[in-house]
Image (cartoon, rainbow, N blue to C red; front, side, top):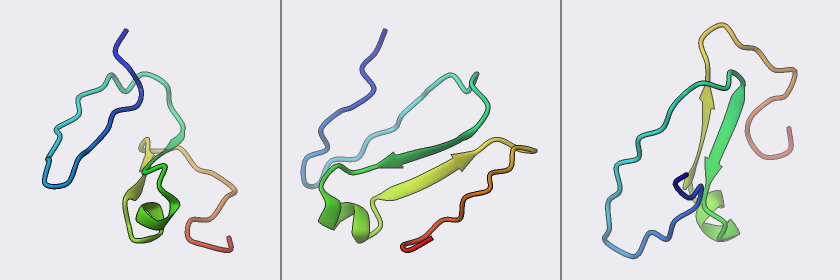
Length: 59
């Protein structure tokens, strides 16, 4: 099974393939909080799946 984390060094570009077989709302993010705050984060949502939670800082 491939790892679920990896290091991205300055200047690197990664293409990530994954099997989307677990419906829900998923967050991909950088573990360096300053980087995540600057936009290195995304939410992946399956079509038709809803969540009571809101994105963005502070809910």
